[in-house]
Image (cartoon, rainbow, N blue to C red; front, side, top):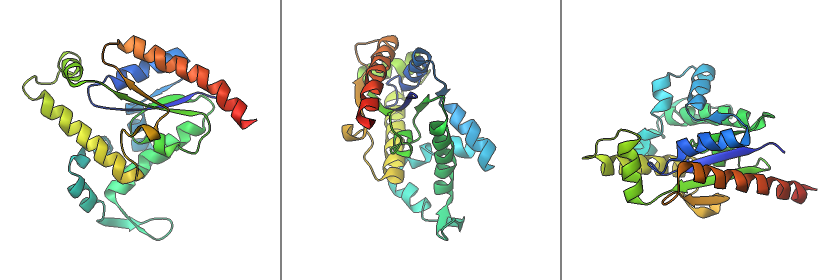
Length: 211
């Protein structure tokens, strides 16, 4: 069975870096900004529009309101908002990634929800404690130390609202994931190895359950 891993993460937990290391360990492609590149190519939306789609959800009320403003019609005749079209552009790309024989590691963008019906997908949520997140944001992401707490809160809120709106599930709820990993007190390399080992141990079990 191919290996597909989705990674949802708190801002500053190291999720993107860890995801790339997991992909290397499993020998599968890594998809983060690559999802945006493919969505731009296939949808015709600008890169800026797709890239900023999630961050626009930092206000749940404003995002929900904007998502009710419709432009065009869906296949079933229902109206779609720009926010929904942007979500579906990435939805289609993630779905196609899941259908390939290569597998892959996909970071963010509700990938766990998009691939929820696909056998063998391993969904991971990565979190960490605030002091560790602040340190990583300043030292590795280059965030302003004076504003880093607000930056973390903004990104977390946007990711939560975006996920909750489009999936009708709760972002960070352990029921939605196969693994929840706190990266405090371990290195990104160690975190990646834990996830890779879990995936390698889980796949044979999933195969047995399908027989």
